Image 1: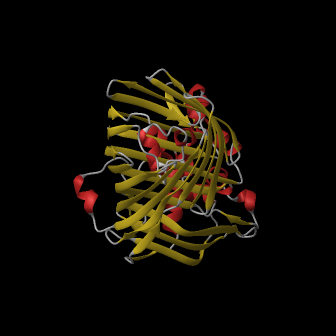
Image 2: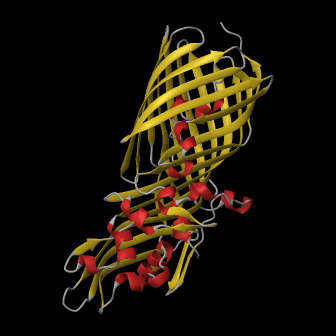
Image 3: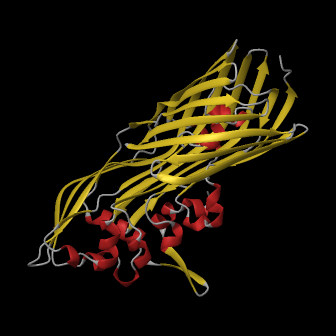
Length: 441
């Protein structure tokens, strides 16, 4: 299981939601993909075939990739001192990925109908600064202190089949979508309290734990040095599309036009998945003592890595296994937008996004401007404040050549200058076949 946890920290660099958290897309309502954020949006073509598309969102508040991995000659090595220097009191890493396989939208008069399939992945880890400090600097610095090292871990993948409809009633569009969800894999540390105390007299270590991990098709823990994480991002076969892990979710949206002013709102991912297959849940609760140990030696010796440390910590605790089924409630997300049309091809907008992901609120406020350049190009720029990040300058571009429409969007184009140092970045790229443009009334 070489470097498994470190790879989890940086999935974006290796291969790579919740709903797509993309502010610049919400204002591009002439692009079919914006209907994934608001089912009330109706495309400007009677027939749209959405080809495979790729979406990825990365969010970090602690050390970024460039802070941890650095070049040493011809190889890349982990720089522990740089990692420790860039820690926050509480650090998190979040990765969301969506791969849409195919989508189809038909629009006849005031009615629009949509069907699609996509696969969605989420990864999240949250850890205190004391955990890496213990791993690389030992516990002598914390003699006589109780130190929190509890770490929250979340991995989730599912397949999603959507069926939506939208209706135009004068200046009002209303839309709804029902989604059949099929769980591929899931791992969640539902409880993750863990502390360590080192006695200053005899160096005895006492660990207090209250851990409960829910797992479906993801985790096998058989004993010392026998932990396997069976979670292959992007590796989905047909047998995984129709397992017994079933769920339903709904999206609702509205779009209201009043002259040059337009107001729209949407609520997405209201639902849950029941996990019934491949269940392996693990619990550990109590106090565990060990004599005279330096925790850095116990966790990894001279060649310590974060994955070996987390593995060994897990083995030091007395986990009990059960196969109780469980339900995962999706994190619902909400969009609100106001847009003012300056001319036929220019508009200004303000939008707000909110999501509560594993008790971690995500809020984003954005101002944007959009323009059409002839009949081929559409461009939108957006400045977004997301939580405490103030450096998000987004750009969305779509180009339509005959029936083929290409698009690329990001909420933070500035990270192109330093991609390995990125702490907040998303991207959406893909193509549509848009046929038979509607006539303007």
